Amino acid sequence: MNDHRFSSTTEPRREFLTRLGGGLGGVALAQLLGIDSLLAAERSPGLRSGGPPLGAQFRPRARRVIQLFMNGGASPMDLFDYKPTLFKQAGEKFDPGTSERVEAPTSEPGKILKPPFEFRQHGQCGRWISSLMPHLASSVDDMAFLMAMQSKTNVHGPGSYLMNTGSLLPGFPCLGAWVGYSLGRLTDNLPTFVVLPDLRGLPYNQKGNFSSGFLPVQHQGTILQASAANPLADLRAPTSALYVTDDAEREGHEVLQQLNRAHLAANPADSRLEARIQAYELAARLQLSAPEAFDLSGETEATRRLYGLEQPVTSEFGKRCLMARRLVERGVRFVQIWSGAGGPTNNWDNHTNIRKELPPMCASTDQPIAALLKDLKALGLLEDTLVLWNTEFGRMPFSQSSEGRDHNGGTFVGWMAGAGVRGGVAYGESDPWAWKAARDITTTYDFHATVLHLLGMDHEKITFRHNGANRRLTDVHGEVIRTVLS
Image (cartoon, rainbow, N blue to C red; front, top):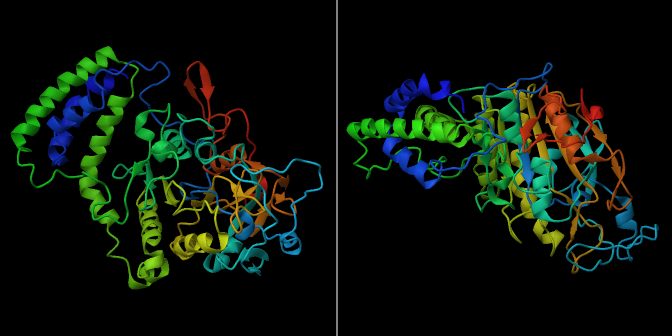
């Protein structure tokens, strides 16, 4: 940390909290700092307290991002990757004709399993889309598909880390954290990076998918529960906390200043206290700005119907999509929306029965995602908002049990739309069974490089010195996929 962050600005920042903090007093803050062991933290040599954002290296096409993540491994050949061969060879033993040993991560390979859903071509581009996605099918001319994405793993945890952080291992910053660290905030009154998890629970890796890793802690995702009465927990002190008085706040601030000075002297390289101070200053501002930003009741009836808020199947995911639109509209830089919790059910991990397990996931997300695209476009926000649809890997072309599909990192599909994206195109192709990527492969590094490029950043120049190495989101890999750029 730098001395000027506390010596010349400590008193104004404390006064700011006193004016706006409400229940976020110094006593509570000091207690939380102690609980989090921040006052006795060991020095972290690779960290600094942030400083000014790096900024874009060239003119960005996108100013903000909404990422939709389908947790569990959404099946490409049942959604977007139409394969006539699967219909022709259904029920036969899978043999790619390459003398390779065919294996499955958690089961024995079964017979070739055809998609149990009808496919049709849509839009001027003629993109094949499953009948499970009728609403999204109407927007294919605005979307660019990455048809041969590939993962290094068939395991959920590492696969989700790789897709979110560019590493198979925990402890690395996610895409949203890198974007916030590099570009900074668009507003002072809302978080830069917001995560809207599934109501049923956090995804695989829990909060590790939205971690700031070795970047300064203030760049981690802020979790909101869109369907809760109070989407941001503990924003205000409970009414029962009668001890939160003006005198208690003033005395708490005095104690906190002493603790700040002691911590700064002992831990000049630790970014966590600075992150905590920034978080509580933001929380004070959120007490004024959040109620309006989180309140969906002011939306028109037509908008509520568009997102499916009146339908039980689409209501919960629709609220998150609508809140995401409201947040980016008000200056949030990066919003991540999750579909599916971690675990064997309630997600896109369809091992048992594709026919029964996949339709509910599609039904809950199809209309809201299509509504998000249409709403952003109608408001003029799609011109500088990048929308991403991702999952951690695909599924096998042969059956598991009788009608399920096992994990497959060999190929899967993602798509993007909005700012700087060439709509109606596709890049890459999988083999005839959607077993492996066959042509113009997109790695997670390529994907991240392309996203950063659209945000005006050269992925090779966005680095952070950590443990003696210049770390970056794309490691030492990655090429911008220019085919999907307008």
